[in-house]
Amino acid sequence: MRVTRGLPLLLLTVLLTPGADAGESERASIEFHGRSYTYEFSAVLDAPRDAVHAVVTDYDHLERVNDSITDSHVIERYGDGALKRLLALKECILMFCFDITFVEDLVESADGIRTTIIPAESTFRDGHAEWRLEALGKDRTRMRIRATQTPDFWIPPLLGPLVLKRVFLREIRETSANIERLARASAAG
Image (cartoon, rainbow, N blue to C red; front, side, top):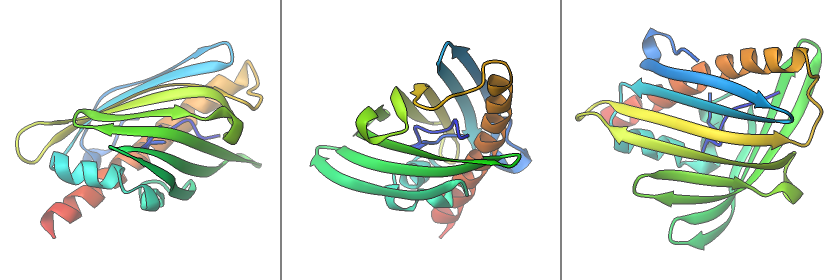
C-alpha cells in the first residue's frame, strides 16, 4: 500500500530518512487513529525552492518522483491555481499488490499546495494534505508535508500499521531523493 503524497504529492508526495544524496530529514512520522492515519514529513533538500516547486507541480509527470506512481495528470483546471488531479499508484507488499487512486481538488498558493481527496472518485473515504516549500538561502529548500487520510480499503489492525509505516519510510526516501535530483538537474540546466 502506498501512504505518500498528497504530493501535489504530491505527494501524493509524498515519501523517511533520506540518504546523503537526498538532503536532510528533519521529521518523519505516521500515526494511526482507527481507520485513518496522519503523516508528517520535513526535509531540507539541496535544491532551489523554485526548482523544487516546479518538480512537485509538474502534475502530468509525477511518475518521475516515485516509481510506484502509474498515472498522474490534471483532469480539469478551475483557474487561479485550482485544479482537479488524478494520482494512481501500484504498491506491492510481499506478494500482494494494491492499486490506489487519489482524485483530488488541489489549490496552489504562494506558500504551498493544499489537496482534498474526492471520495467518490478515489480509494479513500476522505483526506487532505498540505505541502509547504520554504527557501533556505539560494540553493536549499525545506519541504514539509502533513496529511490525514482515511482509506476505503481494509488495513489489518495489527500488522497493517507496521507494514504501512515501513512502506511509508521507503517511499518517502525515494520520493525526496528524486525530487531533489530532478530539481538540482533543472536548476543546473
